[in-house]
Image (cartoon, rainbow, N blue to C red):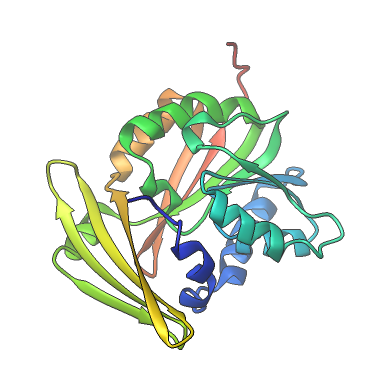
Length: 242
């Protein structure tokens, strides 16, 4: 089982309640408070490109990265009519490799929870090379207590064309929420069943703060809002050598 193969085609309709403009407003408020130049941005784990679309419409240039070919196909189609569409790259976050630096990077809708501790370490070994000195990295995630609270819960998402059943189990040895998803997609008078497995890892703020500091980020701060932790940090102005 793999992540976002079948779900990609239905992701947007099942997350229609997400307020992407509110996320963009938060990012722009951080840019304004910083006062630096912010033109070229990295959308890390961009999914179907809704945040890339929103930020592009606000005048930013985007490099958008995701590991899922199916999600990127949706994103490219969504952004195809933009005057300057994002540059979409299929890359695992742990193997990030850009052509230069961006002014800021962001990772929305708990994309950071999808990275295992090993993948997170690998990302932070690479990310500082691709954000300009003093540039920002902004992301949100679910707190460990929140993920644990979902243990044993079952969720249903549906519309006229798709029915999704989610079952959540918190694996304490793995320190992660593992949830299996059964997806029933309408095909004429019949329904086709698919299955995916998703894993969200529990990263504490203390662990993250120490890890980011060790990899050249400063000014680590977090704010809780609507069951999410919104984190901001800055790429150190000290030069980084290979």
